[in-house]
Image 1 (tube, rainbow, N blue to C red):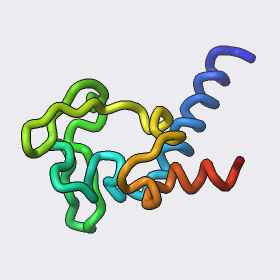
Image 2 (cartoon, helix red, strand yellow; image 1 turned 60 degrees about the horizontal axis):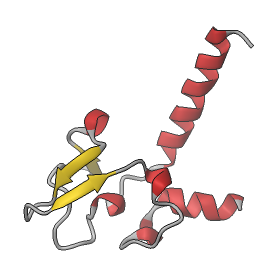
Image 3 (spheres, rainbow, N blue to C red; image 1 turned 90 degrees about the horizontal axis):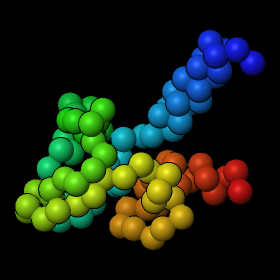
Image 4 (cartoon, helix red, strand yellow; image 1 turned 90 degrees about the vertical axis):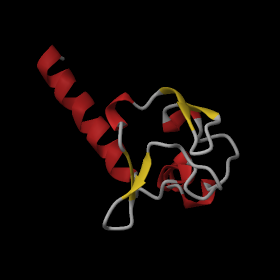
Length: 96
């Protein structure tokens, strides 16, 4: 497989993965008292990260507590508040 085709397939997989997200905000603490300070609610009532492309790493909650933003795949097998809302978790359950 040539590099161009490989890169196209990787990009397609990335887009498919991103499309699973329903922007519920659960992974960023939307259902908790103090969510991530970068979690915003759009006009359509769906959530988004205002630093999405640079989100991974140490961040803060609205109360100033440190929080570590990690890829969602790192959270799929763990228990966390709002897990039942997450489309990635529901998708994983269907394919297992």
